[in-house]
Length: 166
Image (cartoon, rainbow, N blue to C red; front, top):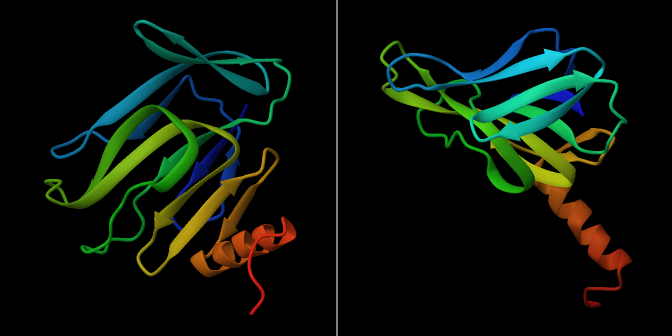
C-alpha cells in the first residue's frame, strides 16, 4: 500500500516512508498521540495487527488498490468549524490522535488519523473557508467541492437511467 498525507483543502501527497515509526496527533494537555512502529524494507507497506497493537511492515509486496492515508482534520484555526472526518465511507482507522490549537489545548482542535482506505472510499474535510470531498479511486485521489460532487453524482444517476424528465 502507498502512504498519503492529507490536510483540509490540500492535495494529498504521497510519502516515502523512511522512519521507523509513524505518529499521529500530538502530546500535551487536551491532546493525544498515537504511534505505530514500522519495520522491514521495500517500497510497499502492509498492516499487521496483533493483540498488542498494529505494525506497518515494509516489503516487496504486490501493489494493491487500497492505500494508507494520514488524515489531518485540522485546517487553519477557526473557532466555529467542525474539525473531523465527515460522511466517511470505506475508511478503516488503525490509529488516531488529537491536535489542538493553543498551548493549553482548550481551543478547538481535531483528530489526526492513520487509516486503510478502500477503492471508491470518500470523505469530507472542513477547512477555514470551505469543505472538500476526497475520493480514492484505487489509483489516485480526486478532490471535489460539494457542488462538483453533487454534479458528478447526478451525472452518474442519469447515466444509469435514473431521474425524471422536466
